Length: 360
Image 1 (cartoon, helix red, strand yellow):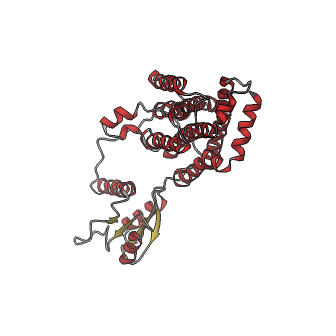
Image 2 (cartoon, helix red, strand yellow; image 1 turned 135 degrees about the horizontal axis):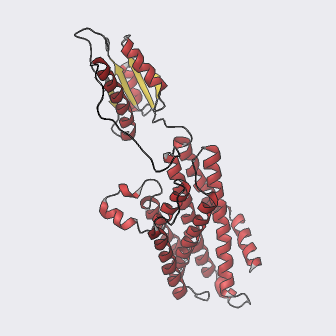
Image 3 (cartoon, helix red, strand yellow; image 1 turned 180 degrees about the vertical axis):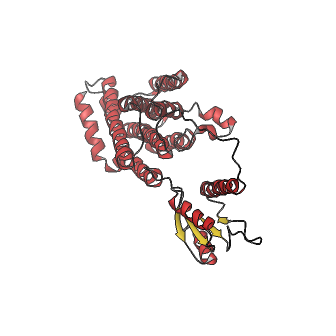
């Protein structure tokens, strides 16, 4: 069995294309999201600023925008040029401060003009929200009024979490899912198609030893995936993983077992490599986008959320985020581990009932 385990590891390393998709493809996602959302980068883009006013208020606003970490400021003098840059998606928005804005003259401009692209909804909210808050404070000062009501924000953790932290854990789950489901399903289908499984039955090697060696080698691959993603995310893009790393890795490997069981279930019904590949994609793609890898699933319509919360990847990600981001116990909501274990039992039952080494 140990020799079979080593053989599987060697085959993984030699299969460069499969190794790329299982190890480096998730790292590409990690690096892309890291550059956009990692570290202290909270910028939503570049804002073109056209200021035609020399008043103290205009100068103060320009300084506030320049010092803000929400966006980068690019000074422009021509409105048409700025609009052209916006159309070409080279900037996020255009802010125009009219002449005499902030002046005490009766006919002085009282409005700041913001020109944005409706496609950049998140950036537009950041720009307009910043300007609205600035002007509200100015209005209070001019009217010598004090705000009566205010907002107090509390979080469930002391860590300053970012969107990249949320996605990083999701990418670990995605990597485990793709590598385990497709890796097991496609490799088993190929073994069957090449009559390798049938030949194994004529050797002294026990069937369970063969399966165990396959599972163990995949778990080693899963461990490498987890380690690489966390190293890149934490040390290069300053992700905030405040929980127990070892416990996070342990539950991630539980996810590896979950997805391997799904892979064996697919292999038990797929008769060819093409069929196994197609079925694997049909299983993994919906979970990639609906189980919470890139966004919280509670943002989905209620009817859809009531369905996707029971997908295998969804409860696994909830537990992993509780461990890594909230430093909480993964069993704080027992329903998550229950769903994962139920999926493992169901997939193993299907595999045991249908998977045979000697199938033609």
